[in-house]
Image (tube, rainbow, N blue to C red; front, side, top):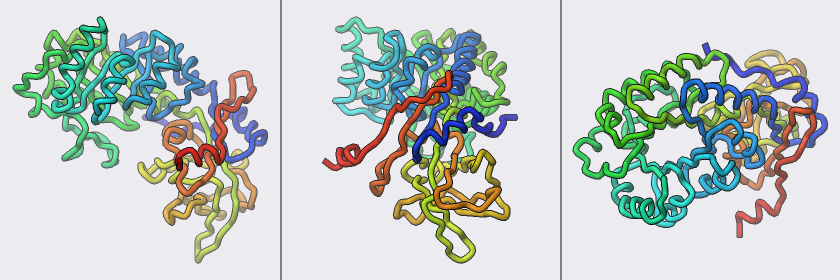
Length: 401
């Protein structure tokens, strides 16, 4: 059984008083632990594991990540450029977007190792350009198709690429009889979100039933299993994952790729904010923070996701005597993080620690309502601190010009 989030380390929590909120604090030691697990899985299974930048994209840490992972996946030009310029030269850049325009293709061909297409219409539109580029530039770039196995395993419709009417991926009916497969050398699917091995195994069975005829063709040399795998969580069946990958590799004679994002950064960061005001309305006491769900941790509203919260190093509960509704400081009425019961009464100026805030936070922050971004700090393995990013009014202004 996959475990809950562990408490941040005492060493990490001890540094909170040294920094001015609001801020994100990344734990280098925890990040390395995740990377070591992923490297071990890659070595034993033969898979190539790349960082999903949509979950974590802190370029100052790419040299570290590049020592363990095989590269990064990108959802478009800017992410691909970030990976190509900050990861080691030998790192692979795998690009897959719901749709490209002419400018995207011209920019991506020189910097991508894989360029995967979400629809046959997009592949048809750019096929000649892609194949001509490979010949003219003696490039080893591969072109692939994102498939939709039409097999849902998740619980949150917002994150289900296999939902009815989904725009993500090509169905088997669309592929049967297709005459455009010349030049395609890989298949790609991404259907999981915070899930274990059983869901992946069931999905692969559905993929084989529908697309096995294509996987068996000699031209297909890679299969990308996408992301959403909780590989680094305690309780994930990593031995089973290694066996599954080895079986796929042997059966179809291809290279397997995994694109974890959350699994790279999970349990490796916190977000710290301050209580600005306590606002009573009926039976609810709102603790208004210098943080925002919609601006700084949108998964709280989208997933929905309930982060663990600590005060004085003590975990807050769902119910109890000192119950508060933690809220953001924007004008959005629904900017609410959740109700938490603390071991004591909150006071203005108290520092609140949100656990597991390295992934899907910094990459999704916005300047909505002109709310200041938290700074980003790194806690090194030797106990020292460094600042990776601080924001100013000029950053906000730059978006308005």
